[in-house]
Image (cartoon, rainbow, N blue to C red; front, side, top):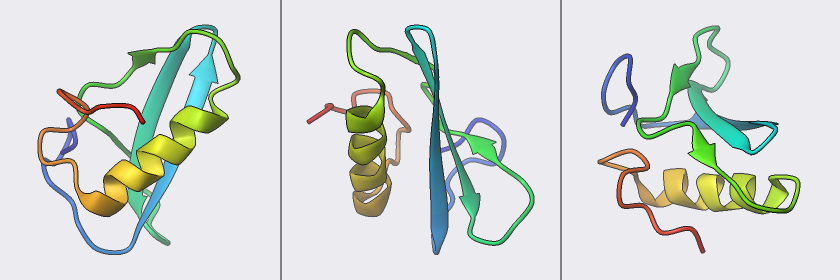
Length: 75
């Protein structure tokens, strides 16, 4: 789920941008110009550099995030 266009599916690219203790997660249709903010982003992160968060976001997008990050369990 994205803030701008709702649910997106298909071949997607995920980016996680960490600034301080905030991480903004965006997705796009692979090869497109437009990026969409995943609903529930930004997330507050504690410790680390965000690589673990990006890996979790890729797994989440692969399995589907119908509610965005709301209720998503970081594992």
